[in-house]
Length: 133
Image (cartoon, rainbow, N blue to C red; front, side, top):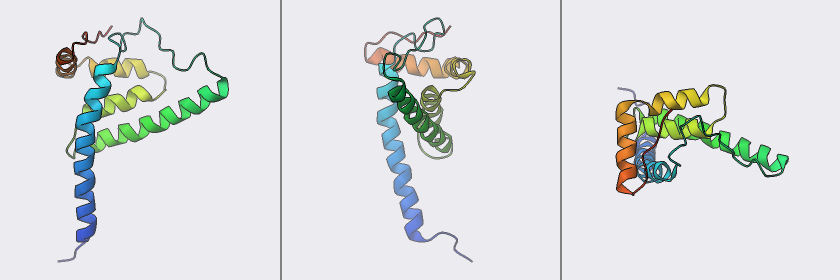
């Protein structure tokens, strides 16, 4: 039988998987608890770096979108690996800027099990529930 991956590569992938799982267990709840309750409500406009210099805003938006792509891809990987895939994808999408983003976010967060899970977590930290409109 031919071996496609060495033991070192498999061990590295295992360690990476465990690290991603642990980081997702810490980072995702941290971010979800700190979102304003109206974050997914389209009646409240989002203003990120609006009062800063245009060059700083452009650099910030580029870095935010790059991070969003990485986090979204990690979420897709977590659908098959250990981790919180859907929540990680939601965080990645929230970092990206593209047409129809808010509609997609509301669709994902509007899933009863997802919204219920997030609001239970927010309740544990005495945060108001997220509103979706």
